[in-house]
Image 1 (cartoon, one colour):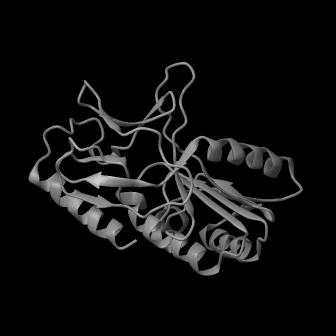
Image 2: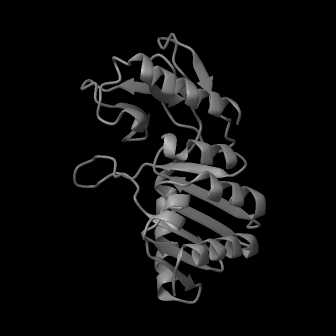
Length: 232
């Protein structure tokens, strides 16, 4: 069933409020309207949200979702060894699947032209996306990190001594933590958190720019982000 934006929003509300066993939301970007609704009416025993990054597009959603298991995708391309940015857009629960070209944002549902389809939990499509969600969740890490204001990068909650800067801690997470601290990339184009055998970039704010020379505007943006995180 192909839905328009209003129909899709109503179906979104319906399945997150009536699902009992699980709710898995996998989307590059999630807007505050959708995050707030999950926080207010989600009833599933297990709620996991997998995002592309901790950029400005997701930071407000993370604030609303602080009571849930929020993760950042870290999948690696087996051929190149590079991080594969998340671009999926679906919500799957024990009741059904909502999937299409729309991110879970106001613009995607109510402003832009997107296709959004609902599948019942008895369909082949539902089963295929359930299996994909399980793999995606396994290839993601819980948010448990800190912003380094001077360096413009993200590190684990175990910031090593050589980072002499003002660090604003993100919320604590009771699950597993990363295995080792932040390491610099020699290229200056990215900085990585090292997890077992795999590098994971968490510098979406600056794209491919060097993070070694951060101007005042970027520091201001980091400051705004840090203030939001400090409220969690």
